[in-house]
Length: 291
Image 1 (cartoon, rainbow, N blue to C red):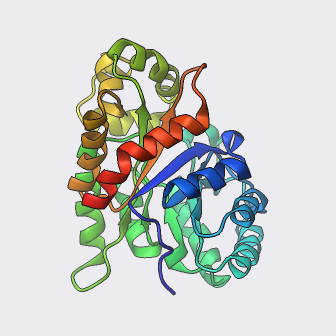
Image 2: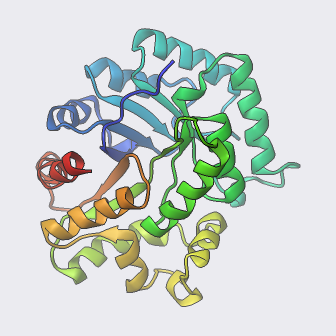
């Protein structure tokens, strides 16, 4: 079993903003994968719809929540989808946020270990699953028990740290674990306008401890992480500016060890989505070819 082809540049987009028609458009534009954001259902019906509507592009979940999705149901759905569209589906799973645990008696890490045990028993292949991973233990687990890691809301500096952990966990002579970061992009040259669009998309995460903990470890301060977030925080987490600035922001992830970047395009109220993605593809495909 081999890892599904991702290409260099993919699209991360909330499931509620995705349609089969948009998936077809993204495939025509040359993106390698679509990462379905949010918590897709364990029945995987929506990823299957996107696969049905397209011919080549890889579809991935980002992520199925291991607290709310039964692993046996998920495994059954995985095999149904993979049999229908062999080698085009990646199962991204994650533990969500501590604030959502509701007093559960065991840790997200232990829940993930147990969940992966169930997926192993049901023969869900390691090569077609990735873990939402930020902390060192979860990153190590992603290298040992999955194809790799899909970190969210981090920087290229984080990628470099993650790459070291993944490589050490895999060891010499083994295929390198995938590192697939998400990166927000705003197609605006004006800093104030770009920040205005980006702030609401960052602020919602500042009440979630797993993100703020890791951001503090990257050097962000309490002032940066106080809602709605500092301009400095936005500038570090969101890529915007001239075409070459956007290209450089994505290239920084590859330089730090990423294999594929899942771009989350943030748009203004008056932006036309299809046209915005067409422009994004025009800007980024050069970066993909050179990486």
